[in-house]
Image 1 (tube, one colour):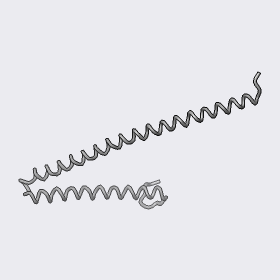
Image 2: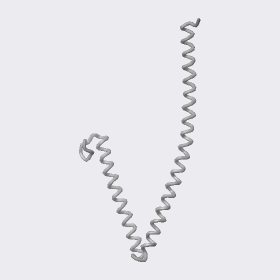
Image 3: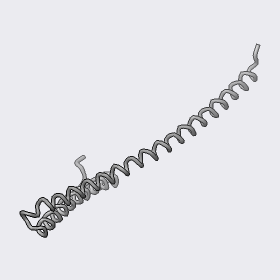
Length: 115
């Protein structure tokens, strides 16, 4: 027949083994996550670089295509103005969303969503 002390020792031993196994599992999991994150980041960066080059090719092609109608200088100006206008609109939207976010986080009632 086992005593209470033996049961408590066995419980402590089991708890220690479980904690060691859990720590080893979490270390392995963290190492895998770091490795996977690195490859995900590399793929994302390469994809973004390719998207950048595709957009640049589109812009150059647009300037070349509009050249006969607007002259090369006019095509360059039209494409540049259009891109700047899009950039300004996107920045204004970002500013608006930032204001909403700041009002939600700061508790400010002006400019934020209706509660």
